[in-house]
Amino acid sequence: MIFRELNNFKCKTYLLASESTSRAVIIDPLKDRIERYLGVLAYHGLKLDLIIDTHTHADHRSGAHELGELTDTPVAMHRRAPAPHVRMHVEDGQRLIVGDFELRVLHTPGHTPDSVSIYDGERVFTGDCLLIHGTGRADFAGGDPGQEYDSITRKLFALPDSTIVCPAHDYRGHTRSTIAEEKASNPRVAGRSREAYIQLMNNLGLPLPEGIQEALQPNQSEIEAAAMRFPTLAQLNSVRQLTPAEVATRIAAPGAPLLLDVREPEEFHGELGHIPGARLIPLRELPERAPAELADFKDRDIVVICRAGVRSTTAAAILAGLGFEHVFNLRGGMLDWDDAHLPAER
Image (cartoon, rainbow, N blue to C red; front, side, top):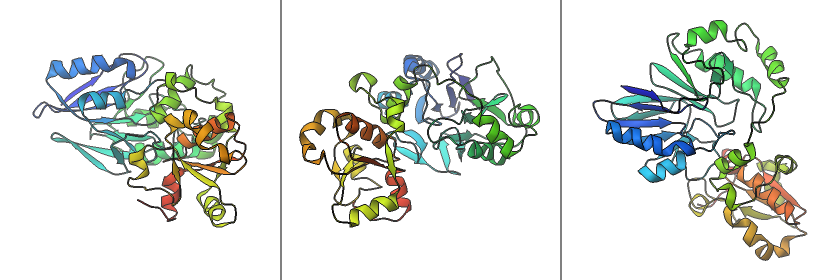
């Protein structure tokens, strides 16, 4: 087995490959290091079979989509990942075959709803859930310290004690740890109850990552920041949210809202389908098309829809900035709509 960490600084990207089959997987690639990854693959004569993003990153641009396009390799993320063009949505417990080795997916939410860890039998790639002698922050949108504690103590700490911990970040120069070491001495988790962990994480008072605006929203939408002026975090936080049940009630009532789906066309007609009567305007086209095409809806309710409720929150904030005053977001997107067994056309 070939195993390498490819970046050699605080953001970690990992290569796993089979020496016998020359098949490889890259985990958590950075956009500004893609040439390096291609060089490493070429040097070792490896065929990239799979790219995995362990979660939606907030402090750097993901290189998963671009690397996938350059190498014709599928990108895998959890089904709760908001980004389009993910060719493989994975679930907890799913097994992924690369060459002659197997990876197991562990859904480990808390840092983000779509966080996964990847276990290869010897190592666990923990994303930003469990760090070496630390844990990932849980104060971003969708973060949940209670979920994170459960992910760490019930899933990651259930792995063999000898399992090597490979996080997506390290800020203190740590190079190696194991599950046994983290159980015994991780200062945030060891000997701490779930309630105490929640209290600790809710009171860290950490500043937002530098460049979060330029990284997080493009990672969620795969639209270049230069191509669209994204709303600020304050504008996003002000978007009004509706549950699937509330949207279904409004659709059935007089004066039903406009249902505006901002996914890509292949998603609109894909596995999750779309709500009957929804109009499609992809997010990347919305700022240009909305003023003319939605002019008749300035004073009417609009419910914006996407896969997981993230891109649609951005779209709702854009519409509010364009003067649409009655805009709502479908919380949880088509994932929650589908989970509630509400009608959809495919």
